[in-house]
Figure 1 (spheres, rainbow, N blue to C red):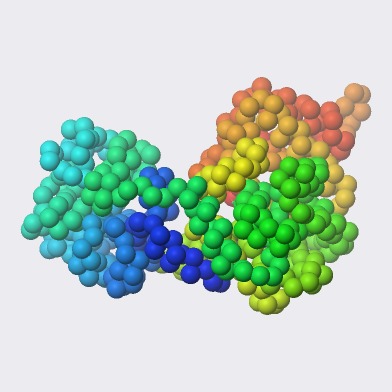
Figure 2 (tube, helix red, strand yellow; figure 1 turned 90 degrees about the horizontal axis):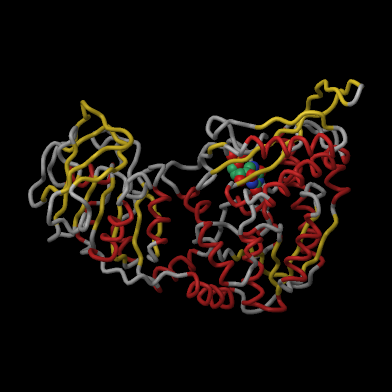
Length: 534
Ligand code: XMP
């Protein structure tokens, strides 16, 4: 589905597809104990060409067995294993006869399970730490005698449990690595998935290839063939409807569907009037002309503008845009004879979040979606990216022949400029923001900075400020520029764009965009701010 839906994570079915993937590929199970790094573990495994799935820590070992894993990883987590309600792992996991690796909290759980005390450390180690590594470890094989690692826990293991050997120590915690190669149980107090752990990749590689016997059978080229086959099986006849937004996810879905169902695909692009400058033409060129997709454009600009009249509240804007989007899309769907399937670009992080042990994460913003649509119209959902991370979607896009320019596009929110025009949305304010934003993006591209930031855009503020132009006083709009660098968009740093670059952009905006007399640059990270301003 188009961008508004790509945040939904309300995936209904396709459990089938997941089972299918674990049946086809060697699979590692990552049990989520709530660490902020759990997804990162999973991404690192995939980057090592091993398929993995993240499951809640309460998963029964009998359920794990059904996936025929080659290994299980217990993630870190915010609790302490000695807390009264601490999450546990099903002890039968150790009888599955597959290697188990515990990281941080997972490491403490293993130690506790096998009889060692875990206690609050008097000398807590957070952040970078130096550890000493002992010879003969399978897990830490080929690492130097001393390594820099990333710690983020205040607990320590008090003794080496029976049958285990000590493989690493740090100054303040003598036991930061344990292994029992015979039983295939391994644990480390630090985080190998975090890039600050210098040899983290080697450790995960050792676990996968030396210990679990991985063959590296996960690659996007073969996934592409499998996905095509799965879609054909899932939607053997009838029309498949796919909303496209011009962004990466929905474009990949559409091109993949085109390959799987050919002429049975109907791709729909809704022009909300809240798009970036020239976006519609851009989409028609790249997806229509360039990739040969049969795109129907629905011009709903008037409808969105009408519905948004007088609305300034961010959440009300999102709800309104979401509602109108569904109505427009529904109208289009009903015009199409026999559309039985709706394709959406849901990604794996959305799926993980919706099953996480933390329960539904607190709503900070309503990320509107067309979640209600499939049921309302009796559609069956197709979500071919449901098990993929963003970097894998990009890789899949390359396999499908999408141009690099499209693959590298920054994300764009479903409500579009609606949440970047603070205050009321009017045609004039849309035009002002489109012009300012286009200058910013154009300059980023021409100076080779676009791909160095994760997301960049302009925001139109609801304030007027005094300026002077020529001999006259002005009282006009302020535009804020935002550029961030991030791995996962959950946290982000503001991007330190060169001052002379910002000066050029500001100068051009004030000179070329009527109604703007001041430009500011946002230097707040997320948290405490969010990436968008609304
Ligand atoms: P925030 O502002 O929450 O943004 O830090 C994180 C990422 O999500 C995008 N975003 C949205 N995407 N509908 C969307 O489809 C929305 O309502 C929405 N709000 C934020 C934002 O652009 C960034 O990439």
